[in-house]
Image (tube, rainbow, N blue to C red):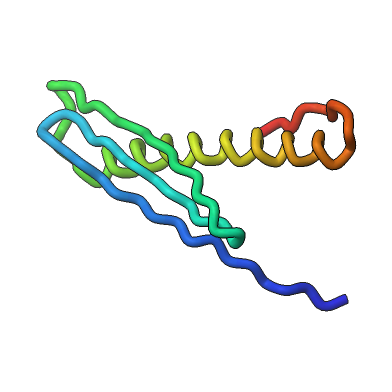
Length: 91
């Protein structure tokens, strides 16, 4: 059976200061809808200034936010198609 490849477009943006990194993530789905997530990371005063590490932590948290929203969206769609509550989807 031949399957069509589907792609998702994901964007991540960061805002940083001396101790905090904020990340905003967005995934655009093939139907044109968008899911947005946010994450943050904080650097303790005693930690070395490593902006890339802050981006990785904040970015991972933003993507995790999106992942949880997508699981909830999928669960709702399964329930709607089945006409009854389905088993929870675990991470």
